[in-house]
Structure formats: C-alpha cells, structure tokens
Image 1 (tube, rainbow, N blue to C red):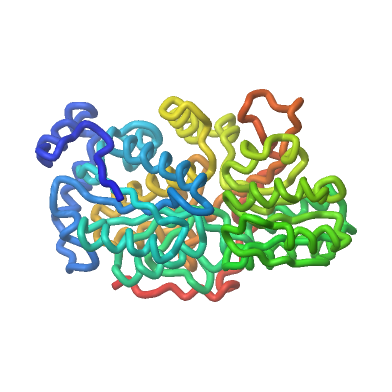
Image 2: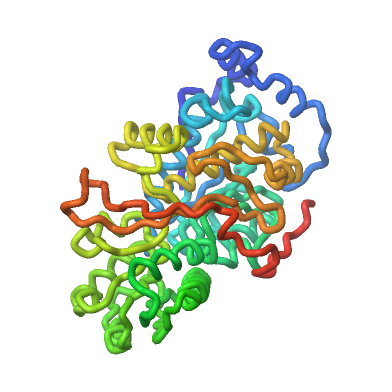
Length: 452
C-alpha cells in the first residue's frame, strides 16, 4: 500500500497558500470562491469520514487496484488513469481545465487531493481490507478502483456501511447497479445488459442470424450476467445457445473446458473470460483448433487482450469496449485524455485507465457543484441528472440505480494489414446511444440504501 502526492505541494503547504496559487494562476473571478464559501458556510452533521476527512488543507482518496492476480494487467492501466486524473485535478489541467465547474481551479474546493494505492490482488477480501485501512486511518473522503465485479460489489457494500462515496472502477456485471446496487456507489462502465444489447444486432448482421453459439463463462457474477444478457439479445436475433461452460477465475489450463466447446457443434465461440484469463483461454482455443472452425466473439473485450494476442487471433473478433483511444478523433475531451496519457506514459490508454480518469473527474465535478464534501449532498448532485460533457460526449447517472447513461462502442479486430500503427487494433463499427440500451428501471431489482 502506498500514499503519495501527485504534484509539487509539500506537506507544509497551507490551505491559504494553495488557494493563493490558484488565484495567481487563474484570477479571482475564475476560482470557485463562491463554492469555497459555500463549503465552509454550511454546517452538516458528522457522517462517515466527514468532516474529519475534509478539515485540513487536503483530502484523501483511497484507491484499490489489482496489481497482482488474474486481472493485474488491467489494474496497472487503471492505476495510471488515477495518477493522471489527480495530477490534472490538482494542477487544473487536462479535462479539469475543460469542465465548467473545475475550470480555473486547482484541487477540489481549494483542497489538494492526495491519494493512496493498494493492491486488491483481484480479491474482494483484500480490496475491502485495503479500503478499510484508507477509510479508518486516512479518513478517505472517496474510494475507487477495481477490475472485478466481485470486488466492485464488495466495495460498494463497504462504502454504504462506512458512508463514503465509491466511484466504481471497472465492473461489467448487471448486479453492480442491479440487486447489489448501493446509494454510495456509482458505475460508469456499461453493464452486461447494455453491452449485450449494443453488440447483438451488429454480430447478427456481420456473422449471421441462424448460428449456434458456445460460451466459456467465468464462474462469478460478472460471467453469469454477461452470459445471461448476451444470450438474451443474440437469441432475439436468431442465435441458438448450444453450450455454456463455467470456468474458475485464474485457471491456467483450459483444456477440459475447451474440449466441451470444441465438441459443441457451435459456429461461434463466445469467450466471456476477462483479463489475463481472456488471453490464456484464447491462446489455448487457437491451439485446440477452435478458432479455425468458429468465429470468436468477446462481449466485453479486456484492455490488453488484443495487444497480448495480436491480430492473428483478434482480427475479425467482435465485442464492446468501455472506450477506445481512436474516440479522440471525434471528441476534444477524449483527445485531451489520450494525448495527456500518451505524453506521460508513452503508450495509448486502455479502457480501464479511462474509467479511472473519468470517474475521478466526475467526482471532482460533483463535489464542486455540491459545494461540499458532505456525502449526501455529493450523492444528490450525482443523482440530479445533469448532463456532463466528457470523453464519451454527454453523460449522466440514472438516479434509480446509479448506472451512467453513456454510449457503448462496438468494435471489430483489425487484421495486421489494416493496422495503421502498432496500437491500432480495433475499428469502431458502431456507437449505440446510452438511452437505447438502458434496461428499464427496476429490471435488476436495484434498491438503493439510505443517504445517512
């Protein structure tokens, strides 16, 4: 577990000096002076880590990412997204310089944002232990970070119990904003339902309507709900599901599972595995000859699946992504994020870094618009339905379940001859508006908890 500052403000920097720096850089009219006054003018009762966590010159954010375990590659990317986000928030640069609420300011409500990063090990218990320490020992005013829906759900429950806002990291399960939703949790990634509804008409058009599909499914909430939603929407297009093979997270040998896929008589291999598991299972599927006789579809393509497998396997593979870096070609916010990331790290961001960056920015925006770190006011601001310009165009959180209403990109893998650069792995073949793929409120039995 580590804690750090992400710009040049040292421990001795006073709140007054920090505010003065902001005034000098941007001018009094551009600082959120009115918001600062509001922040200290109202009295709110103690709740969670408030006001202790917001009483000094800085606030602390607790981050738990999988630096080891089955989803560690995604976790490393996610970590970079957080680092870049808090650098931009504290310096007033990047997307922070483009958002109306944050423009011309540094930090959040005049406070420097410190953060700590702990290794969740891709395990719910480890993530809860890390964040519990951040909440109790560092008075974390917000928590975030995960690349597993099991971890996301465990942290949502912790956030609700501790009354600390949780800007959920990577999580695709319907349960995250469904039966396991919490008042204190907000998710930006498309749910399995949203991804399946966006993907199904595209694969039906490109692969065909009367085909048989066999699924390899990780045996936990993410895998189960991705299977349920993908099957539902592809069968509505005429597909027939002939096999569902469950596999544990972190498996090293997929031979017995893939044997069932190979003997299923399917035309399409739907690989739901995620992270390092998606790479290992795809490689072994190729070795088994499955990819010679079946098309592969990946409902939620892992951040580094294409770069680790290469175009020889990924060319022609359809799936969805939270974000792909070529979206910078049509969106100034996305371009700012992609260019900043590449300048800092020397590579294009993947979608786990994008989630970390976007969720951090939206939290800073919400706190600033609320004029306080008091959790119920921040939550009500996020629930207000205000549309926010972002890397995905206009987005907002649905008040009923805290799912972000946002577009869903559908992509297909490029062949080596189609790639214009070493990281040009995907062509975006469709972008489905969020309103078109949202489940009706109540579909997944979300019952948000209390504010206090």
